[in-house]
Image (cartoon, helix red, strand yellow):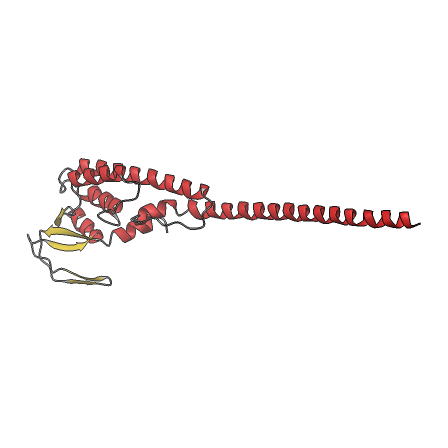
Length: 209
């Protein structure tokens, strides 16, 4: 899954819009949306909200969690926590980018929200890289990280399997080398034991003669 596919999933999240037109319920494969009544808020998928906004047929109301003060508080909490904190949305990065790109004029303090989300992303990605580095150095076979979002997981997906594959190869080679060294040591002990057993017998036979 690449970033565009993750963004596609984020587009399915619901957002509130205030339409400037009236229309009956629209029946989609993913479900029904509407009915639309001019001036009355209605929840619709982000992809549809962006499309209507581009046609100037609605005003987008920002998500409840898209508040600069709340996001800055989440950023500070993320800094102080050794673990990943729970994000307000599994697609907080995608939603922010989609909504601010299409409707920055509708969203209060859009620039502050954009900056806070970017800072939050940078902090979490730094923490994720540190966690992966510690995991790889520990020679562990599995790990558990809670509260990662879809885009964050996707960002390390191409790297992690390759790194783990290389680790397994190194461990296999190391184990094979250690096994060979162990077998060589056993052979040396057996050969030494054989020599020390034969010498007394030869010496005894020599004395008898």
